[in-house]
Image (cartoon, rainbow, N blue to C red):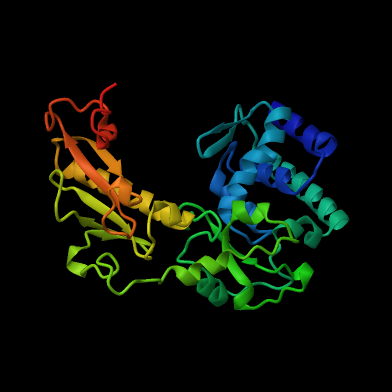
Length: 329
């Protein structure tokens, strides 16, 4: 009889102490994969019991079952996105038997706790929020968390009740907001903070502002909250401006979502320019906030200025040069 079988059987039947359903599910995936399992496959196994977003369960894999399993079963290890059981030597009958033991553990735990109680921390409502409602909420939020501003491309978004159901909040579109799973998990069921209100101002434009009516032909790149154009009076070749679509006076009035959107475009633009022009060896990133700081167009905009070797006699100090005689130190 294999060493792995004896050790796993002993742990599952006698030593496994469960605070949730994750451990046996992770072991099942490792056993089915002959000692190897991808984090996504483990997360998907969790989804068979709780249909929420995979990113959440990928984080739970590290925080809960992997933490405890690797403590008691030193053979279970992690390499980037993959998990494996070192020295795995089970035959098919042994794998089937161990999986059955894990399923027995699951059944016993679920019968004891109840599936609703187990996943109560993940329940957004007594009923399921339909896909069409979820789509409308995320579209309205421009696919960004309405608290921290992170894009849905980087972190999964959830539909949250602004006024919790425990405080009388209704299952209505007007009472929903989009939050990433991190912000949502930090928001208690007694917290009725409404992050959705900032959406009402995203469409704010000023008639006579030149950055509120940029011709489409000037726009080089954009996302849902900001655009990139070339400066009409460039300091250097490919000098670019990153501009929020919403009319806002300066950087300090930006919402977090806009800061994230602008940062994304700065990174994209700098990478594109470095590929396009191999003479570019650095950048100055700058923003003038206030007339005394040199601002002349009172719609926030960020300067991305490519720098090349020899473009000035001595570049030391960089942006410190905005005040004469203060550049060098």
